[in-house]
Length: 427
Ligand code: HAM
Image (cartoon, rainbow, N blue to C red; front, side, top):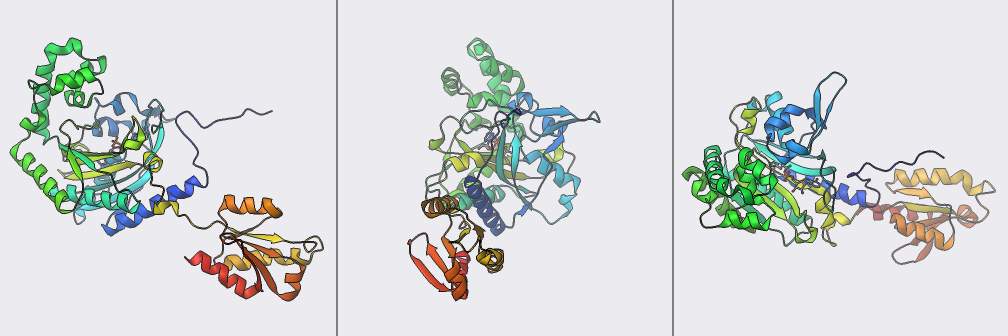
């Protein structure tokens, strides 16, 4: 017996009928994003390793310990993309998109790869639906992507989500706050975890979103420096404008002054959407603005803002009545009855009938089963009807059609049956 294989740890197969729901979610994303003028971009699955080291940041968890990096046969260091903001900015610069009318609005849908410990809602190959607005003007751009995000989530049937947001200030504010936090935590170093001690030198801001209760208490004490106090006046004004936009567009939000996000490129607005239904890995979506990234990757100073939804997590909490669950009808089953097939009677005609149905836009397939097995098959495939073709039908130029929803069976002229079935596929 041959060796049996399993999908690699942290990856999975998406099977029918679940994969059809994913496709519907993506279809709705495409429709909603088009309403805002966003167009699709598809970047490579792997990139130059240095793109992420520079773009996402050397001191981040992603670059430090989660990347799938390999050397190809030509000796190049390549990395399976752990996220797509850096690749989109790389493409923007590479293709001179800064010379197009600004802003440039792009969206992407596709797999991302992070070497993390798999658990509920956390995979090594996961999928994101994301959007980036490049060359925008600031607060209005932040508001636009949040409006689009919420329209999409509402169209999917979510009613109770809110966005948690914060401002990490401009680059100077961030740096000044990082230095102050480091000064404050240095004498308390003994009480920090190993991870946080490392971050103290490389990226003190990340200590703010620590999961350790003791560390949370340390950074929340009155004596601890507050990020808010370090935000420059223009950055503070930017954030106030974003909040005003959110209020006027009815987007529920909550300020979270410890939200800093795990990627280095953010400036000003950062945000996350969480869902209680998910357990520990509860962020469905993360995003924010990034003013220095395009420049860091060799382009002109460019204001960028965007988000990425974790599609695996989104599907985990997709409402039961979501329109995305209303997937297209399965194939009509065509069953040959009695001796007709074996005697070559209907057998000769069935292939022609199947093609005739498809020509009319009716999904169909021949089904060999009988009785209850046939109905079980129809139900498992989501078939709206079963068509029976026997000698009587063949002789009379009719078809018998059994509608699954009503369990009614009728014998009708062939053309009328086809017309009725076609109507089911038009809705
Ligand atoms: P991120 O927060 O690293 O941001 O990822 C966004 C979302 O991807 C998360 O909220 C989560 O739903 C999902 N996700 C991340 N890692 C995993 C995993 N291992 N398994 C399942 N889902 C996961 C970014 O990636 C930024 N590029 C977002 C962005 C776009 N910022 C600006 N523009």
